[in-house]
Length: 114
Image (cartoon, rainbow, N blue to C red; front, top):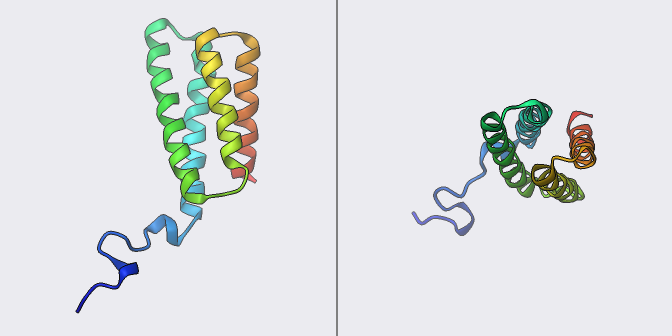
């Protein structure tokens, strides 16, 4: 009673692999958390900015992991643009970099909401 090479313990089809819509729901939730933190960031006190930055960093990391699992064409570009413009915004807090991050997030959101 040996294990088939394709069905080793812990390597079966997980719930998200069986139903990609679970990834979409998770991604929409993570995008919303990132969006709320990004909108609040410009008006926050320094201590709150640190907390919000942590929220945004965490959401970007888990979004990247989910998108890698989906292996959807073009999504990595959207996330790469968002990560790049978000990083510039955190470093400079310029209105231009904020607008770029918001635009990237909106583009990303449109893909998962439509």
